[in-house]
Amino acid sequence: MHCRSLCYVRTNALSVRRLNETTASADSAPLEDSLPSFDLPLITGWDFLPKTIQQSVLENNNKIEKLKAEKDGSLAWQEIQKYSQMLRDGNVNWEDIPPEDLDIRLKWAGFFHRRKRVPGTFMVRLRLPNGIIWGYQLKALCSFLRRYDLQNTCFDITTRQNLQLRGIRLEDAGIFLEELTRLGIGCFQSGMDNVRNIVGSPLAGIDPYELYDTRSICFALDEMISNGGKGKPDFANLPRKFNIAVGSYSVDTVHGHINDLAFLPIAKDDSSGSLLFEILIGGLLSPKRNETSLRLNLWVPESSILAVTRVVLEIYRDFGFRNSRATSRFIYLIESWGLERIKAEIVRRLEEKDVVWLEPLKNSIADNSAPVIGSEIFGIHLQRQKDKFFLSCHVPVGRLNVQEAEVLADIASNYSCGEIRLTVDQNFILPNIVRTKIESVLQEPLLRERFTHRPRPLSKGLVSCTGSQFCGLALIETKNRSLELCKILEETLDFPDGQTVRIHWTGCPNSCGQAQVADIGLMGAPAKQDGKLVEGVDIYLGGTLGVNSTLGTLYRKGIPCDFKYLLPIMIELLQTHFGARLKEDM
Ligand code: SF4
Image (cartoon, rainbow, N blue to C red; front, side, top):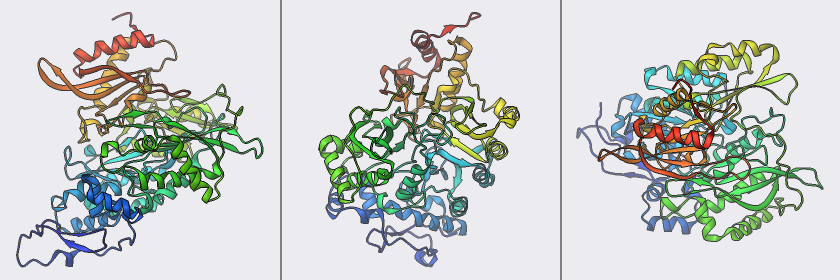
């Protein structure tokens, strides 16, 4: 085994540079001789930046921007293959890989090294536009994970209706990527300064009341931005991450209001009869700042959505701020320019390309009194298609082990033509179940005992981010703790019929668990207990979804996670705000 740090990197100047070479033996062959050869792209994300931006990036002190300038993240799409093969050949250990590649750049390929919690293993985040995955795909992913100790693997459904796989080793990345290609799934551009998974309605095409089927546009957006998760450099070097959602109603059921860009169908164009979408921009949840999106006051038909998205991304890529990670999300550019200037620039670019856009039509606002189905609906329901039903099931905090995922894949194959829809609430929906199979699908042990369609009032609204079990940024453990607290509260309290309380846990202010959109949000924070620093939470209250959605506001700060402190506060909140009552025998 050669023991050396990897010392040759490809740079943005398309040259090979020698950095910090250290070798264990003086007579060992130069490392470049042993590098497998892979075709590198001629164009990287860096090459799409205007020269002025490239220059200013080189001059500023943003560590991540400098790292991207030295070697663009999109090069990880090839280098991950190289590292994988070198590890397989036994030429290096993962510890020999430069940390800026291992811990940061590989995220451009969807591989997240878990250095702090499970060093040497990776979480892989897929791209699943509109949250759709098929039984055969899930089954194949399970087969792949079976090469590892299953104790160290699992699947997590995310709040962007996406899937994360845990426990993958870098030496297997090449085989894994081949398998993904065979399955028609991508994972490139799922992390760092990229457009994240495109969110659409999980009931698209089957919802009896929807105004719009979001599936085609979500896939088209994913194709335009990431080449279906296989990587496309045009938008692979943004100032920061960027979230996009497309809704099926004028009412926001896809959390469009916390996305950087969202399209919601709002009215019909009287002359053409085509559906028009309103555009929301600038929503975000972040450690420094949380905002609901702003109306751009510009409507477009479906045929203009791709062009609008491209134009918005070009503006953000070319003018977004890159000096500080804390102030580089899209909202900061919007504020600096002002909404009118952003709109004028978007319109100017659309007109250059002859793209159709409209000022909002007066007297043409959609009627919000029409029925709306949110993704939090559970149970079996009639679809828009005659005699077809969808079954909405609850996944406790979005986590499935490999055995459960295998059984779910089989259930999907047997009952829903293989299709599985993931939701932003970390649950799943099985569509297209025929009437004659309803009884038998409801009797499936996995769906009776584990992923029930009749969750209890708190369980059904429970969402949790990864937390400290796997995430190096976490301030607290979330998934197990949230389940335990939920169980105690459900054993302690009765709720009015039909009551749902959405409780979201998030392990740190990055808010992947979206604490601010919940009825009650719990965000990891330092707390003091008996004079000592302990794991704690800040509590948010009053986040709403749908019409006039709002973010929750801070209610209590620094409450220790110890249930001695947290439980009474939660009981009181549930009693005073959500009609809960102590069970009679308590
Ligand atoms: S919110 Fe924080 S702790 Fe939770 S997954 Fe995101 S980064 Fe990790």
